[in-house]
Length: 86
Image 1 (cartoon, helix red, strand yellow):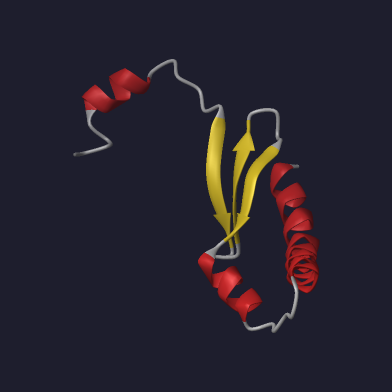
Image 2: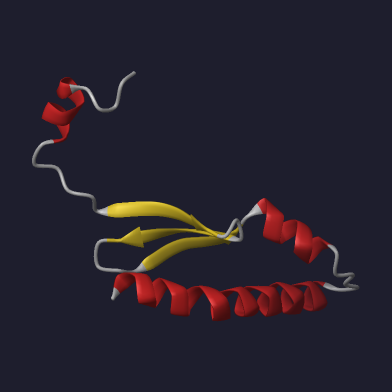
C-alpha cells in the first residue's frame, strides 16, 4: 500500500494527530498526548535486558533496581524531550 497515494491523502484530510506512540533511544516507549501528557511509559526489551543483569534477592530489591534504572533513564530523557517540545 502506497501511503503517499491520493486516496490516503484524501482520507487523512482534516484529521489531526491526538496521540503519538514513540520510542526513545531503544530504552523506553511512551505515548505523547495532544496536551503533552506522557502515558504508557514502559521499558523496552533492551532496557529490561540491562535491568536483568542486576541480581536481586527479593521483590523489594527488584523494585529498587527498576526504579533506579528508570530514574537514570528519565534523567537523560526528560531534558531532551523538553528541548524538542520548545
